[in-house]
View 1 (cartoon, rainbow, N blue to C red):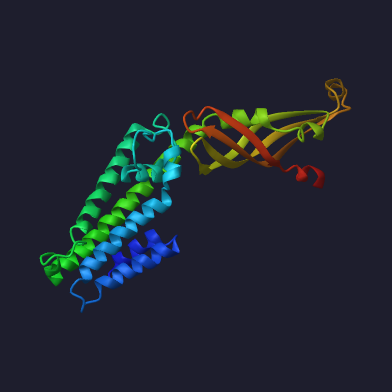
View 2: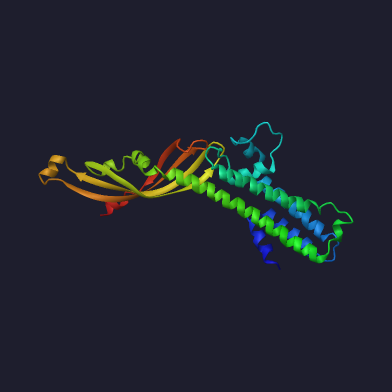
Length: 273
């Protein structure tokens, strides 16, 4: 079996129907006694790509996006690929070069689908493709589809990495402001020195907001007694580090428009000492 078959099957693995349809398309190609085996393969594969795009980029979700042209009658293939890459993010948030790569992905996929479409209409010419030419085209089409979906995934990762980098810029200062009262209750005076080891990831992007989750640690100085007590050796200070989890959202049109929520701060180590 050609290695490319297993590589492309991986693209459709997350949906049981898509995976079965891909297997059926390949089985059509290897039905050597069927004179329209290649035609059947091309037809099934073309419909599989169409089905995958529709399933992963539903019309109602695409139409909610700020970048969608509301004057259009129908959602286009470009729209669906754009949704796969950037969901509801506006053009102001995504780098222009990445938008160009969206178009590159779309054009590549269009080319592949056009190649498949040539053989879906059964004519005397279309069923006369010889074994060598058919075999080469079989591999070429699968390689091109793999390339295309890998490019979509690559650009999507670049977009998400860019958003995370942007969100990371001032997050430590912002979280200090949001830290809850549990810290204040630990001593007479609790001072937050810094937020460290912050890690964030994107949980979801919808038509309005980007939803992040994250974790980090807060370095705190705990003071027991007043400043006067400290001067008279009747007080004490201690430094602690507490892990915490947080969530925040930003607008799909403005990454600086954020709302934070400290999900959990773990001060249990304070009581264990």
